[in-house]
Amino acid sequence: MRSFQRNFCVSPSCPLLPLQLPSPMETHVWFVLPDEFKSVSLLNQYIVDPRSLKFRKNVHGKPELVWESDDGQCSSPLHFNISHTSSLIACGVTVNSPIGIDVEEKQRKN
Image (cartoon, rainbow, N blue to C red; front, side, top):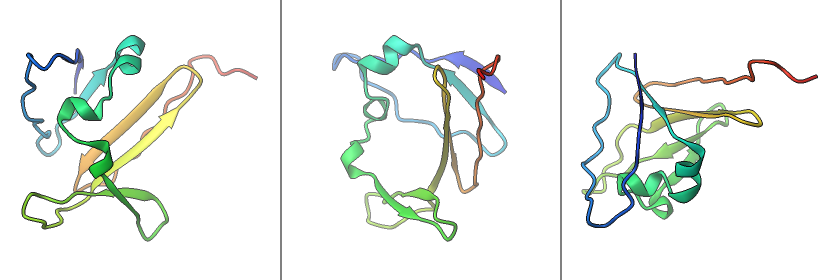
């Protein structure tokens, strides 16, 4: 597993490279600073218009993304899971494979 900090470029003069999806069994962990998260839309950094995203519920009632390619064909859905505490947020995203993620405070508050 690789862990690294991702700094986003918000300037039009700094074009973004296309998103490279991980290969099977490869995991990327990205750490985003709170100021970065508040100042930019993460989806926009991947040149995805959030309004273009479509959701559906799977057979278990869990929301999932429906992704349409340029030719209008639906590919396999992206799977995602979100977990949060008062100070942490984790989002896991996979292609063609369900995912579960959980975060907890190091010291639980009673």
